[in-house]
View 1 (tube, rainbow, N blue to C red):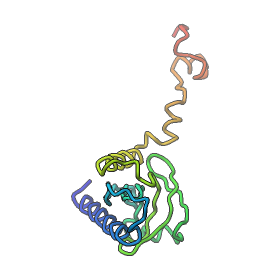
View 2 (view 1 turned 90 degrees about the horizontal axis):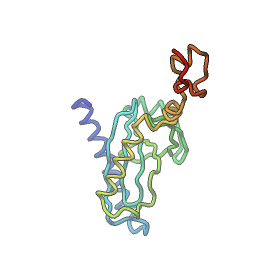
View 3 (view 1 turned 45 degrees about the vertical axis):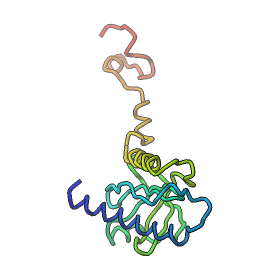
View 4 (view 1 turned 180 degrees about the vertical axis):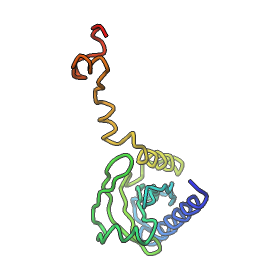
Length: 177
């Protein structure tokens, strides 16, 4: 990541945190499901094409968050009413996100990872979970197609020569090469 991209990612994280800190202080104030041991923190964001992907820790949820990078990217999303469910492709596969938007942030998509977050003993545990989730979402090795490719039987040279299907155990037969 270039220095300019790192600066932009840090600015996105600050905006996310500021908006959700305001929500915490207003709309979520005194809500009983809050975990008082957690504070708002954005993990990431990471560049995923025309979007930023972050994991947001709050006292009431840990969500994967997608945010458009530019006004053009906002337009490419089209009009999605708040609460609409939209699938997005990430390196680890397809995930269902919910459309939302907030003043000071603009439109975003969120995918619930943990809600509520009462199981987290402290901020460190929540941040470890968020960092692990972000890494998993960005890991194409977790993609269902990658798993299928790993399980797909490989055709050996011997199997190809003798016309055997990969499932036939061509690598252990002892036939002459």
